[in-house]
Length: 583
Image (cartoon, rainbow, N blue to C red):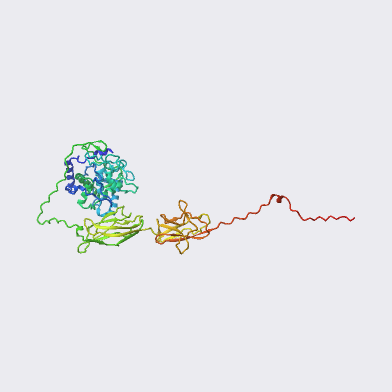
């Protein structure tokens, strides 16, 4: 635990009068107005995650630990782009946000706005929470990937001045196997991180110590329960769900407003840390010494409205919520959706909300939910998302990304807060397809009986002229060019255990659409044989293989015996016959 945590305040250990006075002074010049006490158990509304999970049973927010109560300066920076003011390049030190930390907040806003635009998350809210929870990751003490260079841990949640939460992660994140501690720049409790953790920087890990991961998770947490953070009541509930303290709410809102008026980027590690406080005593890093309980901080009283002057219009009474006007929702696009595995559906589930007169209703929150045995997801991986109807009364879900699992599922749409009939869209994920298969090498394939073909067969798959990757091909030896009967003799493949087979399935093309078949064995029969490859989508190619008998061995020349080679053959006699003289 770094020494700067000694400057953090224990919950309930701050002078209520001092903070209330500071908040009131800030409100007079730049901060939010007075905020009445929460009436909804301070955010304990069991927020729903990005699709599937609810808040853990401890009902704790991400940062049930200490936090900084330092308020922003009253002389706020000029808002960039304001008339007569040049863009802010430099400014008050407190307005500077470390580069990587700022990038993480802005990336989280962009990501969540693309998947849940109705939440209206602003990165300055994440910056306000990050300032209060960890001083912007200790002034930007992070590495190039956004991970803190040393641990940022809250005190042990042992019931002494804080909630009592027994260990839930076996010390994996916080190093404490007895009690949990808030972890990382956004101060997530391990059990909460288990539900909301994200991998926003794409390194394959969900790390609460990484500012990109933590900022994304914090944004999703704040947007839970279909909150619209542009609505003051929802904004307050979101902040209170993060840390149940009115003092915390005032402080975060003050920094939120401050950052909205203008900020600038500073190098990592150069951010300003909160000033030293004398009313927080720490003996062991992260373990505050018990101190007398301070008076409970109460929010400033809500000012009474001034008497109306003659001719002053009376306040407009609250209008009926848009959802209350809706009598039904109906499909405003195709009733069914189809995509191949691994692709994005080309059409988005879209509904129209209408009132009793059949007119479109704007501003209605519609919840889209994916159900069924499928790995298809919205946007960043959510199975459930909320969208708001526009001026035409239509609301469209984010694009749906098909997974690798083929089959059918359903996308349903319901009006948030109403029990109207749901609208359902049938969705189907089909196999990856190829309408054309082409052999790469036209070289004749030949082998002799009992042998193996020396050349391997490679084909390329395309679909509509485009490369078809990940397509499952089938290779079968057939008896004829126009038939589909599998051959029972001739060439064959071998399985891993050496078994001869004449059909292979589950072969898949690579990222470039290519597939090279395993080795082909000739068998013991001569002739011309046919191998057919087929793909979902109609692609097919037939390859000829010729098997011949081995060439006959040459007859050996007889070798002469040793005797015949050394003795000459007898020649005919040419001598004159012997004459017997006459007597």
